[in-house]
Length: 143
Image (cartoon, rainbow, N blue to C red; front, side, top):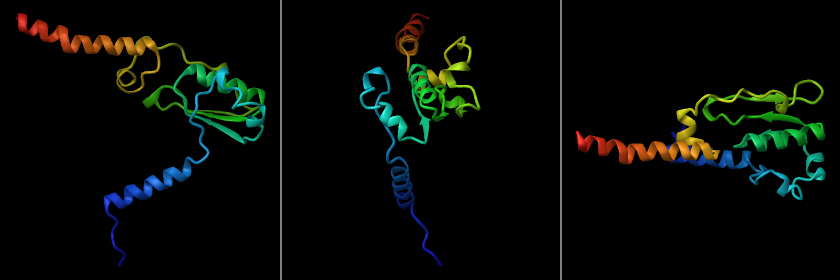
């Protein structure tokens, strides 16, 4: 009979597997300032690009480069827990920048709590915190 693994042992195994899986993953910002790193040579050595980016601007930037270099792109989206994914294949599907979601009418709660990536989100979060910490307790005291 095989001995059972403890939670710590399982966590260690998962951590090592995740570490191995992410070798070669690029964790730097992608924008015009980093084009000396992500140049034509960089893109020519790729078979496919998998985006895990936190802003639409960064997604659009990578999309333009993938279109230019005829690279397939797996775009994981910027909507956090909404879980949208788009697969872009040169000469077969539309590019990411050709198909944009309409702007959201309001900022979702999960984005405000976990995925702040625009100044509007930060301001909205700060206002909510101010209300929670100062206005509501003040109103309760005055009642």
